[in-house]
Length: 255
Image (cartoon, rainbow, N blue to C red):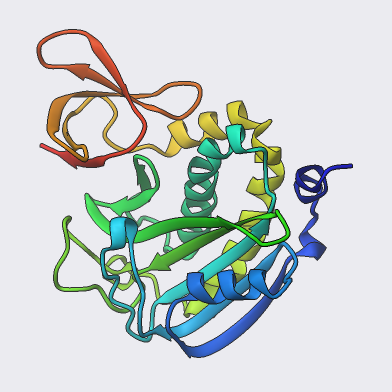
């Protein structure tokens, strides 16, 4: 049995949690534990991060009162199947956040590929990082930051807190939901073999399908209509000038 096969068969009992107070970055902490031989399934949470970061090296403000959590996975899937992992993570986080909102609150939707929005304001971010360990195993870390009591003042998108929508849960309560929902969704994802089921759940929670968007790529911006995602999770953009384009990575803005 290969290492990826062992990781795909993890059960809820294989996940464990270590809560810290202040840490530079929960993602960095997980990677350091991996280098020292930590097994797959380790969650690290912190009350505050002094060096939190988002995608593309952006700073992520990490004040107390929010949830900062990272999950270490070892050899979660063959490299060719890892591309759908962000979709699975978004599905799990959307489910967990939805559980702490009161009845009647606006829905939590996913903005491609894995940001969560409520009424077009971003309430969480996900950063997935990885490296090949000296023994040849692949460490993948899933970092989740959720604005619960605090929202940064500056950002590329409008930002909000769960408290703005009536959620009074403590970070520990939200994490308890995330702990179970992530285990359930990763079992459904099944090392990338269950991508069809994940795509179906992602589409059901997606925001903005059918709307005009601008996608900032690394070298240019393009616009069109957000037609959803294909069966592998790529963004499908119907271009203003005609034709359809599939996009693997970029920052999406609704217009």
